[in-house]
Length: 116
Image (cartoon, rainbow, N blue to C red; front, side, top):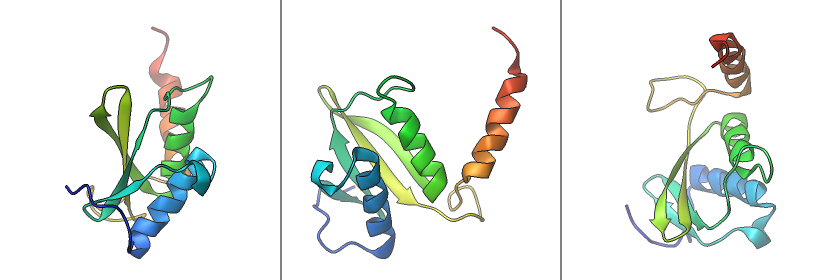
């Protein structure tokens, strides 16, 4: 993939950029955005957690709300790369992404796992 700054985004790349902007609290908090195939990526040093300072949970909810495949990868010391690709509601595994109702169904099934 390239490390080329996003200058002329496709509709899908702009959609992902807006979603990540929402995640970080607005464009003024969004780090440099790079092309990543048909998607985009940003690098961040934010802590990712599920409850206190729940940026990881927020990212998962945004991914399901807007049907964006999110991948978290390494980016360097103390930094992570957030990769985003827009997906559709239907299609093959490499094309679709579950929505919020699908996430709710996954949560309902997780309640049946039982105690550890």
